[in-house]
Amino acid sequence: MRTIGIAVLAVLAVWFIAANTASVAVKLWIPTLTLPLWAVLTVTLVVGLVIGWLLARRRTGN
Image 1 (cartoon, rainbow, N blue to C red):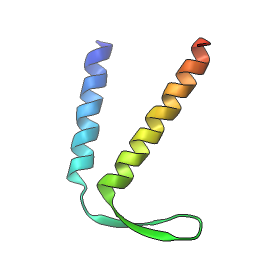
Image 2: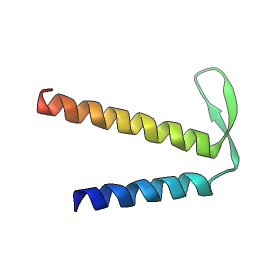
Image 3: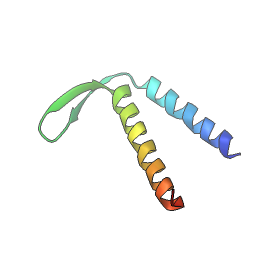
């Protein structure tokens, strides 16, 4: 059941990222970058996955 849930979430994330292709302005501390929204969403997803993985690893003690 867990694997199915993860697969469904992964498909939804890919679909959401693929559906959002417009360019957006992203303001960092000083520069403002214009990037495709799919790139911003992908980076956000990857950072979230890494943080979640690190927190889960820390919780299990490995």
